[in-house]
Figure 1 (cartoon, helix red, strand yellow):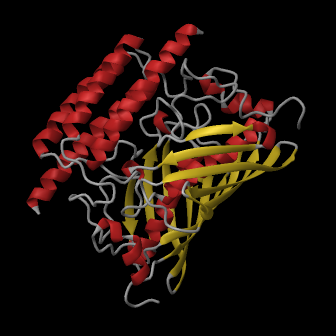
Figure 2 (cartoon, helix red, strand yellow):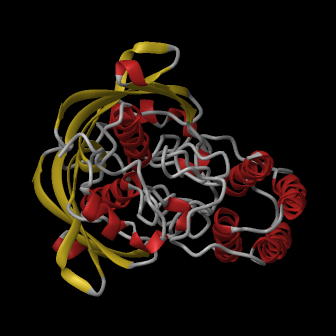
Figure 3 (cartoon, chains in turn blue, yellow):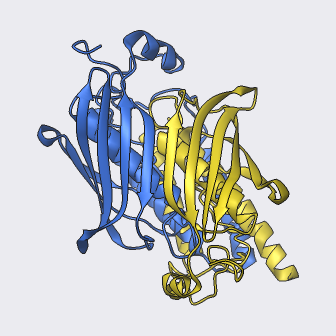
Length: 223
Length: 223
């Protein structure tokens, strides 16, 4: 898998460069002539990358769909230009995962604040992941977010997910967001019900990918 | 405001070019050498745009914070490289808004499917917007999303938000997502409670922007 590691590194470096570009694009005050120059340069760059494109349902060679490691995840993907990105550590023995993230200008909601839908995205990820990391992978069936306080851009955040109960294909999880420098004050919290797909339903849902996809499917031991 | 219109057009064109670049970046299968070339080109492009940057709390000159028109919104912003983008039409007399969007590879969750957190982001936007368009702007206090069916990438979607009850600073709204070619089948639905900030609290929350921000604040007529 040496080749895959080399590609993963290159994908991660391009992802980092594009995240910096996105941040500059949503904050730039350069003259209109420079915006036009940038547009032309972006089109050239797109042509280089578009010389060989995966279909929208195709799984990237750098990914591992069995474990759920996704290099272009819009939440944590090292190769994703749209991810904040959040860095997440798994503690499967405790059914927990802990994400660290600082949300920037590209994900602004009300002026100066993180978009509430982006907070929901971060919570959704750790909710599903805390279940998946303990072998209870599933799709989110319901997600409830309670916003306690406005969350400002540029503040280091900690996003924690924790598996609750498990009953057959169904699991529950809870999550919260705090500022790294004020961990006692909850800024937002989330609750989810996750339901693992039955194998036959998973085959149908993931058929367009042309691959077996384990991480969102029920395990042999449960219903 | 001719100058602002010229800049808005240039910002929109750069946004479109960058969205195409992002799409190519998350789907490219070009050789590693080309990824490296692209990284260097992206860094050069970043340097061009970063010559003059707004602070993370500063409001863009193309924006109108009084009406809530945001050119870099991560949901609908013409200048946003991370937005799907959704095109939203407001029907303030009915307390409704209707979004049209096709979600691409950059917002993938499980293989081939739209990320559940991105569906929450789309719902959150129309929920808050249906209230805001009728003069009941507020921050989301709670958001509940029910996922009925997996939503595949690349499918034209319709996302509808509708204002429910209004009680002083508090409003409720509901929303749903359907496929444009199967409007009778709900794919996901959302409910929210929105609460307008009191003027004194708004001054505090938006102080870092150095501007008066009307769209998320209580109107003079309500408490």
